[in-house]
Length: 339
Image (cartoon, rainbow, N blue to C red; front, top):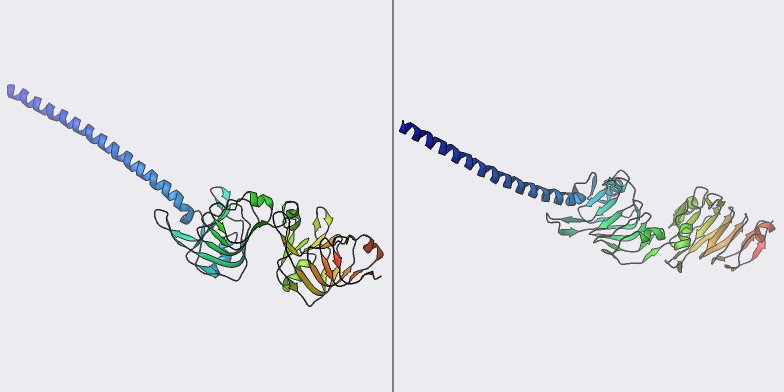
């Protein structure tokens, strides 16, 4: 009987030890689980940061100039990833397109990075001009060689370089930009200044002329109310500035033959050369530049603020001449009425 009780005692003791052992094992597993959870959390956070560069909702990869148009279009990825230097002779537009984290954003990722997010290589995109049309766009950790025109809020340049001029299309766009972490080798300016910015660049419509091939469309009824020149242009055809768009509720056309800084000082003036220019729209003006040729005015309200006509100025009626303002301009030839 004593042997039997002793056996029961030994068995109970072993059961108690096993229970204690299981308790310690459960505690250790719990600790390990917490450690894995913490590690997983860190990995998730790191992945979230890196997803900006490689695993966003949509992305486009550019390896050659042929990829640029689609990548920067509204159908391209919110992030445009470059895998090397790319050069094009086309003007580029980064259009408003995809969303990132619920807001409009585009990014030119001109770099690669390692698993610790150290930049391992930076690339250069070369083009004559890049226009930014999407809010919260950025050029990051690489170089755009050319001029950048910003036509949206929230532009950023984190670690990026613009090897050229940076032109904001309004004071509002410049004020909303963040350039502290980047570099611009050329001039940073607002094209049109504060009051003039809407007049020069953010009106209902505008046309930009860089060559004679642009003139016909720019000056047609379908062109912008303001025609912006970026240099001297010469044409052998006669030109007509047609009645077209409205500005502030009235008919108006403007030949902007100049650029200016943020204080609205004229920094450059250009010359448009043609045999003849006919003005058909009311309240048209040639501003801060030169038209080399004869000008025929067939509408009321012609103005010449800071402009020069290197030729004759002919009004098609006395009424048109009486309504004109020429005090701030210069006509090198004859001014007359030809009815």
